[in-house]
Amino acid sequence: MFGFGYLLVPLYDVICEITGFNGKTGSISINDASEITVDSSRLVTVRFDTNVNSELQWSFKANSKKISVHPGEAGEVSFSVKNLTNKSITGQAVPSVVPSIGSIYFNKTECFCFTQQVLKPGEEKEMSVRFVVDPSMPDSVRALVLSYTFFLVPDDLVNASSKSQSVEVRRRDDGQEI
Image 1 (cartoon, helix red, strand yellow):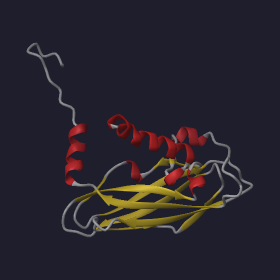
Image 2 (cartoon, rainbow, N blue to C red):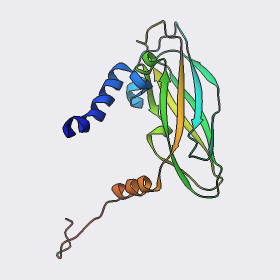
Image 3 (cartoon, helix red, strand yellow):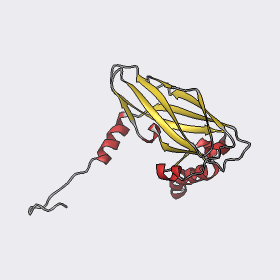
Image 4 (spheres, rainbow, N blue to C red):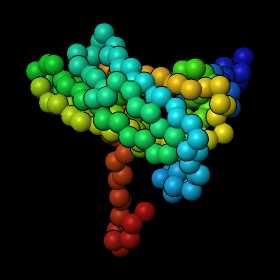
């Protein structure tokens, strides 16, 4: 039972990635995105939805409500976020795309959701997302909604993350690194 429970999360992630279930998006490199052939015969409208979990006292909005892109063409949108408190807070955005079938074809080349965002008291920040809609997306999908929800990252997770990123270099008595 323990083994099954342990493997359930990675298995769920793989199923979501393959099927687009749960609106999880893909990511590709800028080089791979630049090699995609643009389908200029059609347009896809991408709308933007922003949310903030009730535990996080931030304001968050897309600077554009929607844009239209040709499949294969790079799109970019900026978002504004502001810490409404008098203390530094760490948050992280979780993306989702609907309809689910569209999430399979929505690939980000750059996204603020890949990293934890630290905002000082009252700090405002502009963040961008760059993406490409895969030209192989079915013609029946003409519109997508990219939704982000920002969540509070608890202090213990922030501390654990910063500890895992630090590297301690130890030396032997003769000065060699170990």
